[in-house]
Length: 373
View 1 (tube, rainbow, N blue to C red):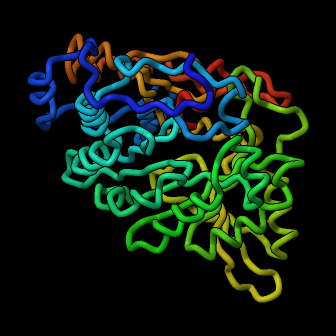
View 2 (tube, rainbow, N blue to C red):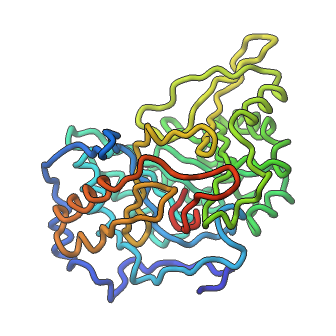
């Protein structure tokens, strides 16, 4: 295991990676026609791919990684950019319209802007541009903001679990709130770019900050989102009594903002958040929009439109399950056709729902850092 404090970089093209030769990969980048739908056995249509490009991170958030760290994958096992592009094109040709790049922390991967630009040039079979998104802790965002947006990223989510510097340091174990603030300022307000903040709501830790975080996000032009704590890593990182459920989040926001919350539609084809308009009770003025992600108490599995690809090329049909299908091996053995067949196998095994329980049981063995949330 690499030391918990170490941040690694993957080499762009590991020399001994057991994959297709470069010439073959280039050939597979040419557009192909084929089936344009990904539907699982329950009739759920998959249009959203979460793509982890690294298992490294410069933070050690308490709900994401055990204090001793996690075993880091050797560089040679990580998908090369050429492989990622082929796999993403296979997904897009089959019906995926949103690709969110995650980690670990995606901005620690060497050459990440080049990868984003590659993905940003991908078009759907109908000629529309792929909707490219990024989830980041924001600490490296400020110096890369211009390049990230030029690459085609139009949706950016930034983790902000506290606006108190001491609390922020506690939950991230090393993070800099000042750098995160700078990253958000660098991307908010850009034409055509949607920015959201993600806050894991934790009773007894940051539950008194939710209204403050919402106001701050609105002041930047961002949409604040609040997330229920999940029992990842077999529940090892879940603290009983710390779950702040969606109903409590809404009630706290309504009370502290002196507002009422009204459900509104979320963006088409987007993720699992449910969005609400926050309306000032005294004036009737809309204060802003908030999103709430509630996997624990308001299960959204019936409408799940997502699958997740980890940095080694393993496809996860569900965040809450450890079952995977190896797309890297499928690519090496059968090219894009092999990838599509493997995707179909994964969809056939996509579970009806997770088994998260309020007592912290029912979670997968994997940690959040290994799959990017």
